[in-house]
Structure formats: structure tokens, C-alpha cells
Length: 484
Ligand SMILES: [Zn+2]
Image (cartoon, rainbow, N blue to C red):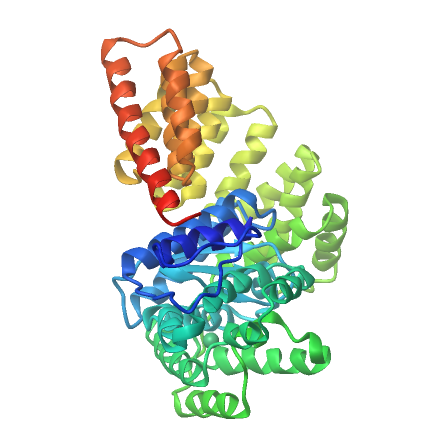
């Protein structure tokens, strides 16, 4: 699947100047000329990201985690060298520590990084460093610098994505199959780029209000881990080589900054509890969180109770989960994640009206939470409030017109109402926004054959289908021209 993304990306890059080999790896011809516009970067990044989201089992499809990374990431972006830049943050379920920036501002963070960080400032430091690689266009500049081996760098970039997964052997195999030892070295950012990302990352971290020691603390721990694993150094250290000079620069910067105690956000702890619970079976997680509560060994009581309640609900022990949710409410803990868990517990108990009420109240307080938006729409669906669900989704689409999940929920609601034309029309947008043009065209064909809908709805489907077929034909032409 990664190979598909590589050949697509290479085809986009190469124009007619080189062919793509049968195994999906591009021919390393010296006629390849690279000219990367920001639009092209975004297109390549989007294709690889769509590929990861559709096919990588490690992709974390969890709105709570997505919301958290989005809030944290954009707080840092706002304090970065390019606050207007386009960024998208996502998580990969993988116990190793890694974070990586792809073309187009897509930044992936392994769950291992979230669980290893000892404070939110440490996590923010890692992400601020990646944001700086993006804002300075390091990936594209690296390619421009390589001249002859530009395509190898393209492959290396994809290998970097591959290497972000837990299976390091796959990455090694990919490097071997590309038969270019130089690729592995190109996977690493140059010393100059590392220095720049460290310096700007530090400024971003300070400006965003985090503890600037987060950087040297986290990298110090990474360095230790690197020593422990020796040759099997974490992928992160391979792509961001940690030198003695880098470490001492970081420590000096932190020492010269004024000391500032920064408290972790509640959501930082909640996200970690959720990830920890997801890494275990519900039974194991219940045991672990109960033990921590009994022995009072936790960084946050609220987050530990949240983990326990989450695990109990996953284990379908609804009554016990409800009891923990009540305790959380009594602790006056407030977070979109806690509200979402309380509402899901109510749904599991068959209290649809109660769940809807929790979501409505929480959305007043946290209108930016996508997890609450999806949860509320689902609760309305579960409670068979279809018209209300459609109105709510429509109002959200006014603001978030490119959110494929909203179209998926809209399609489900239309399906429940037996409106087949509308169902397939929404499903088409659901696929289109994930880069699956062929599947979108197919859905519009189903919509045409649905046999329901009025004149205006049918005309709208016809017009949309003509539009997408044109796009599909253009894409096919482009691929043919590129010899792919
Ligand atoms: Zn770096």
C-alpha cells in the first residue's frame, strides 16, 4: 500500500521523464527533475495520508485522540514561524517512540511517544520540532539538495512513513529492496536542518507557554533508550540524529531560559489513560487502574478513574462504569472526553434521552470537539431521532464542509430513513473526501438507480456524477502520460 503511494507520488513528480518499475518503486533515472510547489507537496502528502488512513491498521481512528493532537498541534502552530501554515496531526498505534513530518504538513505521532512523555511539555517539544521541519520546508529542501538522487529521497520519505510503524523489519526490507544504501542515510535530516528545527522548536515551545526543558528532558531519555537498544535505536533517533552538540545546545538553551512550572492539561492525562486502556484487554485494564486507585499511585486521579470507567464500559460492565462516571462527576472534572464517556455509558444503559442531553450540554461548553459532534449525531441515530440528526449534521457541514465522517453519518441517517438516493449521494462525498474517486463515482451511479428522490435531487446527482467522471478521466490521462 505504501508502494502505491510511492509510485503515485513519483508519477506526480516525474512528469514524463521516467518510468515506474513493476514493483512500484520508481526507476532511479538521472533525467528526473524535481520541482516541488506547495500545491504539489500538499497533493503528495494527501495521497500518502489517505493511503495510511485507508489501509494502515495502526492508524488511530479515535476522535478523542484526534481532537487532542489537533488542539495541542495548533496551539504550537500558532506560536510557530508560519502560523498560517496548513497542518494535520494524526496518531499511529505503535509502542515505539516516533514522530514524523510528511509533505504537505501532515504530522504523525506514535502512541508510544504520548505514553513515554513524562509531561505534556515533553510531548509538545517533539511536535514543535516536527512543525519546524515543516515550516522550514526541510523535506523539499533536502530533495533539492540531492539533485541526482532525488527520486531515492522520495522513496526514503515513504520508507520513513513505513518505518514509523511498529514493524521495523518492514522498513529494513523496504530499504533493501530499493537497493540503495544511501537511502537510509537520506532518511535522516541533515545536521543543519536538525539544528534549525531545534532552535525554532524551542522558540515555538516557549511562545506557546510550555516548559522549555521539555525538549532536553525528552531527548535525554531518548538518548538513554538509544544506548539501551544500541543498533536497534528507535526510528526517531535514526531520522533525527542526536549528536552531543545537539544535546548540549538544548540543555544550554533550557538553562538560559527563565524557569516556568507548567501544569499538564487534564486531556493529556485522559488521552494517556485511554491509550493505556486500549493497549490492554478490558479485564487487564480494569485490574491495572483499580490497583493504581487502591494504592493511590497515579499522576491524576480523574484520569485513572476515567481509564477504569472506559475499561469497564469496553468490558460491557455498564453498571460499574456508571458508578465510576458518577464519581468523576462528583469530582467536578470537566472535559469533552469525560462528557463523551458519560454519554456513551448512558447509551449503553439504554438512556438515549440522557445521552443526548449530556452531548447537548457538553457541546455548549466545547463546540470545537469533533468527538462530541460525532457522538451526538450517533446518539440521535441510536435514539431514532433522524430528522434532528439530519438537521444537526447539516449545521455542522456548514462549518466543516470537508469532514468525511459527517457525510458518513449523514449517509447512515438517510439509510435509516429509507432515502436511498440521498444515502448514496452522501456516501459518494464520504469516499471523495478520502481520495477514493472511483468509489465516489460508483455511489453516484447507485444514487441514479435508487428509484427514489425528486427531480431536483436527481438533477443534482447527475451534475455531480458528470463532474466526478471528468475528474476521473483527467486522472487516468495523467497516469497514462506518466507511464504509470
Ligand atoms: Zn528533526
